[in-house]
Image (cartoon, rainbow, N blue to C red):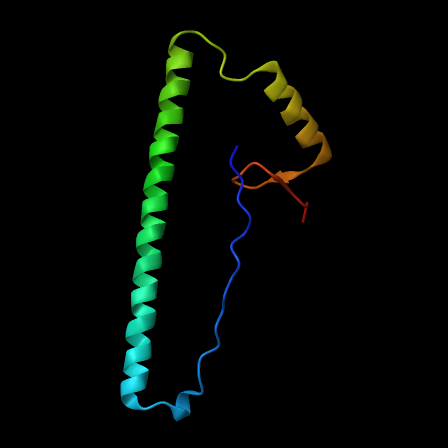
Length: 100
């Protein structure tokens, strides 16, 4: 499974706002709105890809069920039993996260 390192966050502080002219403020707003729109577009693309992958997985599992194959292996049951016995929580990515 493909894992990626967390992206390095580059958080720039805003300039001293009182030192900016109205034009500079408007320009900064336009720049940040553009950045937000680009990020929003990327997010929508990622959500679309996730939806396509999930639909493919559902289709494959439905095919297995329809052909009589078991959707849950003995290994899956064993892992689930172990997880439940330990009281671990799992994130959407399937990695254990500390118990709160």
